Length: 268
Ligand code: HXC
Image (cartoon, rainbow, N blue to C red; front, side, top):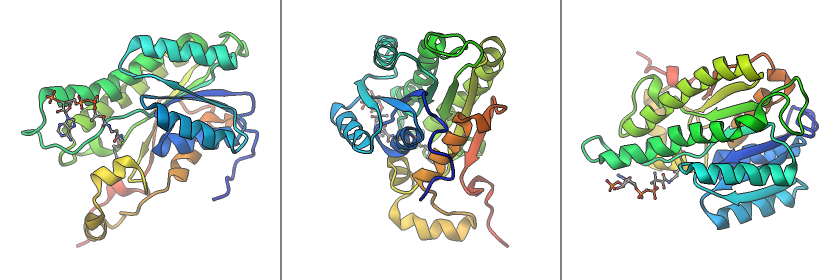
């Protein structure tokens, strides 16, 4: 689908995206690039990064891929420094890296629970911490008065509760809390906006493939009248809104992009 945004809304900006090589993260990388940003993508799998960078460059987007695990502070620092070395500045951090699998609490080991919190929650914090000095107003290569943006990809599972997702729900609830705390403190001190996006089920992503098996789709519609799959594009457009000047007064919010699904109740 054609973007409703002007192609230069992110001109001159540099974005670093964790999990930016696949799924929703890759679509955000693509749309940021198509709207003028240079993008650095961070991920654990070299081949995924290489394929993503090739696809971005083939569309004329300035892109690099750097291997790293968001759970490791030394990886985060190395990736951020490599991004600065290559592009000279940093304006946007997207925390898209996430771990997910279905497991009932009785089958989920404490280490499985911890692993997802380490990727989603601690990983988000590690990346925020590592990028602050380059995202804040007046950072190297940036305008003296305008800070950058952190965008945390969340979920809606934890607004109520979701079967077999105790670990992800806990992790994303904490991510939303990080969004608010940093928006308050870094918005005040560094003019840095911190927001989130909570996607609903998005067609063709690893998350939806795991959480919504094919045979469940028609059943979901029966019980949840607002059940409808979104597209990666929908999330990328929300990200563009928040990253562009259109979102300059939005701070500390997690924008739900799910067609209203989390409110859905059966008709009676
Ligand atoms: C139960 C599992 C498990 C599973 C891993 N574990 N997979 N337990 N069921 N399917 C447990 C392991 O037994 C182990 O605990 C612990 O987790 C760590 O596992 P490792 O394999 O050693 O860890 P690691 O290699 O780091 O992999 C972690 C991972 C990750 C979480 C499985 O690789 C992953 O999720 N990859 C997929 C990424 C993904 O799908 N991303 C999309 C996210 S979508 P023990 O006790 O045995 O040591 C998303 C959207 C949500 O988040 C909302 C959508 C609406």
